[in-house]
Image 1 (cartoon, rainbow, N blue to C red):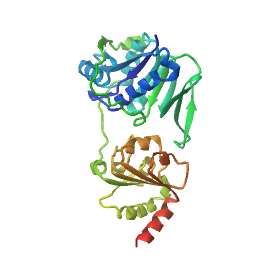
Image 2 (tube, rainbow, N blue to C red):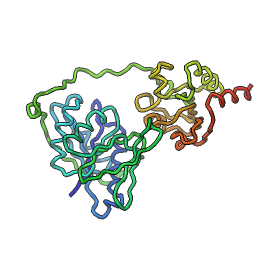
Image 3 (cartoon, rainbow, N blue to C red):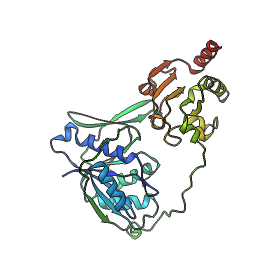
Length: 332
């Protein structure tokens, strides 16, 4: 029987929340019309040096059977250990799909795992649907302004990395927990020549974005503001909203127009304000992952097809600087 495998996202001994989203996506695939007649089994794999406690927690919360992959050498993550050990396990399990988080860690090892399994690889998946010919996946393309629709063309396994914030958690409460099976695999560098990667230390970039995370109102600037000097207009605009914090999309940070501590998105801060005003932000999937929990979203963008509009409560089609200028003039 084919199986759907979910690789739990574990970092510093903790379960990352994206794991629950991966479980929800696995259920969506299992219950899709193409697979419903002969539904595959779902297993969640937990790679860790001591996976028992983590595995039991996941099995209880999801109700899905869990394989705790005990890897004594996995004191800290390296892609080499992950790829080698997951490949040994998954080759024996006949998977149809392997679901991995589209995070820095998932993006690091997923391509190598797909290569080792001779599998199809679809990164950054933000949608799953089906038709009479099978499952179809969507992923961002053209600098996140369009979605590319893709379908695997063979019966090989499919390795998917799923964007955070796209697949809603099941919200399962109670019920029978899944079974836990602990399996031990040792990393054997000799089998792949020699150990090529050694973990030295993990460094976190120092940033102070706690105020941004706690803000009730956020005014965020994007590439649509045209120049660094135009940030002043956004700051003046934000003053009309009590205690508003200023945020930004990644391009502005990359161009050194604004500090990293104000970046919102997958590689920045994750925020949940009552009001989020996106000024000239197109709405890449990475940015949307950071502000998806905002209660009310207002987007200002001159492109009527900007992805941010699909996630907004109020959509204002206008040049953001012209809009701000008109707003400031009308407000006196």
